[in-house]
Image (cartoon, rainbow, N blue to C red; front, side):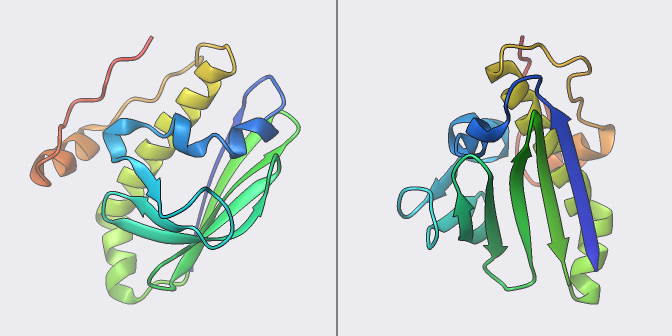
Amino acid sequence: MIKNVHTRDLGVPAGPFVERIQELWPPAWGKQEFDRPLGVGADGGHGPIRYHCTEFVPGESITFAFSDGDGTHTLSASGTVLRHELIGDFSLGKRLRWALIIRWMHDACLEDLFDACERAAGRVPAAPARWSPWVRLVRRSLGVSPHQPQLI
């Protein structure tokens, strides 16, 4: 079982940011697109990562199930805190890919998303996300830009 959690205190009510996930999605990680407006039943994802929306409570939370059925990820709000939780019951092969590659990419993507949310909330992130050398190397090996966009 894999559980990965990211949180960020935005300093403002976090609820409105749940439904702004597509608008604030960091473009360096592939456009987040769905086959219909965001809500239960929407199928889509970003880049090669595919999922579908299984639960959506505007202003509170949105949950996606991975298309391969191995897990879920949820973006939720509580007060001023935005939280993302990934839970997966992956096969041994997928757990190895998670440990070596996917976790690092996922963490960098989520921190970029939370930076975008914090900027949209009117704050400059105290410690803006920085991609590790490993993330840059993996991105380069996948043929995508190894350079993190510079944002103010």
